[in-house]
Image (cartoon, rainbow, N blue to C red; front, side):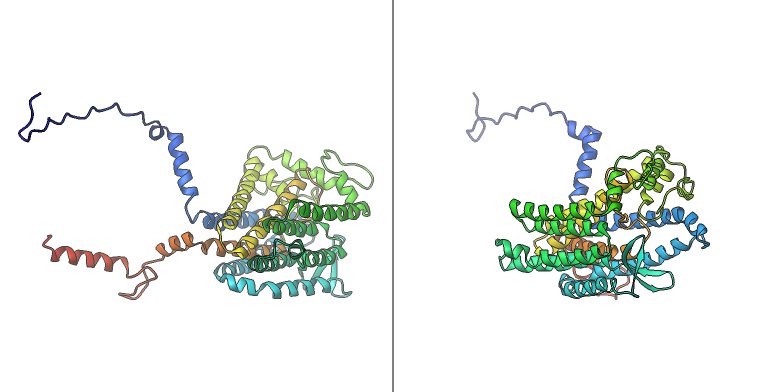
Length: 451
């Protein structure tokens, strides 16, 4: 073989292999899945899901409160927009609370845990004082503030248990005390039972179920062993059975699960059946906004506990699935915040808030669908009721603050700070403004001879 001038054999050209089929790039479904996966894994995904999902639920809830409450207000000789105006005022106040909570540092949230718990216990005790507390629908859980305004302190008890329980478990985890069962249960379980006892004195078992769910959520996040978890669950189950068996009203609600026709006697199931009628008559896209028939006196509590039924009648299956998707996105974002943080307080608080909102939504929607007994709890951020809306929006602000506090999310938000409106030459957290950086690059290029 002839050699080259250098004495080395000539280099032969590499054999080209046929290109592999680029199915992943040519497949539109695969491209869509890849883009969705990249968007899902971005550091600000949880932040946008919590902020956008909660705001959409609140806005849609205001629309449905206005639609579902008009007939009830007119029957009470009130203006048609009476309940909507009160809900809108509560949403404005809740928006301020949400903004403040989203901007507060984690240390301040922890500092507020004990004052909020003490205030909630004090107000829940005031409910039982004659002349101060008042009864609504058979439950002694309200305090009159004057005029048509009332407050339900037990709703603030949920927020108090989340903040205080998260701070307690975080301090015990920092001291490595959660490996002992007595430190895991005391004083979390006794204080929770104190709140539950104050609530059950007024007969509100629905709110008691939500607080129990928050308690079990905190224990699960703390890594409670199975036998300890099962023991506390068994005690709560026995107490629940006793409370249900000793109340004819609760037994009647339990008998209405899956009812399709009104019954005679104690368990008439009127509300449960007409909730099913409303959902069944909605069809795919509903009868139209404001065109509900069941809200004309047939469906009790159409703008509070059974607003999901009116939503299904007016907006159809598409509307109800949209509400479910928003709550699912909110729950996923809360779980993601709790799972991605290294701060134990953030993990417990985010998990507690997510358990609270998710469990309450499941109980409310399950009762409307006839799968669960009617517990008398509102749909979070959606149903009418300022007492329920205010602490829930503050809790959403907590989740937003936690989502913003993640290192990757903090860096991404810092890169998106507005570059306009600052003084000339002023630099932000990332340094000088963009056009100053570009000017220095241009000067360097000209100094090197580039034109």
